[in-house]
Image (cartoon, rainbow over all chains, first blue to last red; front, top):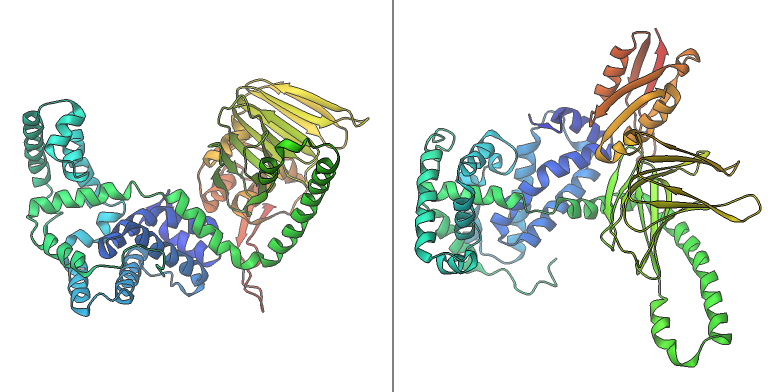
Length: 190
Length: 335
């Protein structure tokens, strides 16, 4: 079980069941960002993802007395949000075939495992690998892979040649390959 | 749901996503994973929590909102009356319409229940931390001739600088006026004192003196001022003000704090009821710092630090026939 702000999750659940809003807030702050990112990978819309997760937490508060203290919150939260997200797609008239494929992917692909979205060993190892990149290379690489800029755009933005951009990206990939190699056991299914 | 959304969900988008994810190499998947982790950091949790918090607190406050609306209506009647008289007798004919529009006011009210502290960003960019069992109210539009908030309880302010628009905190019959600074105001209606602690900049504390004359007192950084509501007098000292403001960073500092005062702090901080079952231990004093500790740890540490006391904690139970819980009770006795 997770430890949130130095408090055991068990304690927080007990306090939540007793109607303690501070406990609710701590759980919310801990899980919300991850759940939203997770849901947005199903409905492909971050605003909608936020609505789904907020709605889930509101229901959680009002149904708090039905929570069982032994439950693992992480898997309960992520399963609930997954089902809610897939239900939204049903209302949006996405065909059953596509929904089924999506459900299969969410349930089998490691890119949807809860540990990726909340503080966990897996998450910190991936973060650590990126911290190994020199700042400049990290900046270029982030613009390219995470923010979707083209090499030309990055060259213009940072006032360097396109050639430099290409070299730096390939350097970044080399470093990351090396760093992430050690964590193969964590990321076995990737 | 989603009536306002421009695009309906588009099936090919989902097919593309599935195909794209299938086509990733194992290395690309690691990069994709890092991208997702990165995304979690950009989610605005504060805003989301405010939305959720207002929804879960709505249900049990229907009557409260109704009565406060009538109160606001009453407060609004006077200015409106004054405005009417002013328009009838004194107004110059050429500048009416704009002023009319600007005089439409609504009130925004924010409450922190017992056991909970909240942070609010005001429309002018100032930050406000609201301690447990406190309430602030401000008008919208917020920035008119000044920036005014009404406070009942305790709040820490980090005010955005604006020389043209003074920031005024109204607490009972007193006011704290500033231009841009960080300070704490403790003004629970049920307590006899109003306390102001200033971290940075300069503030002016104003109150109506005995003959109804406005008096004021100026505070410099690290000044702590205590005002007595009945005597209408104040005492000011330059001191370490950390213990008065640390709460807004979830730190509770006890500095020779008497048991009775500590009991009040625990009640507000954790939303429990504290019973001191022995006259003698009411005189005990405590000096320590709790950095974001849960209640059970705080109680444990208090017990360890003074071997003569024993602390009992009883969890609140549902009250029959209602959806409410009785408060949890902390009983402090002598061994």
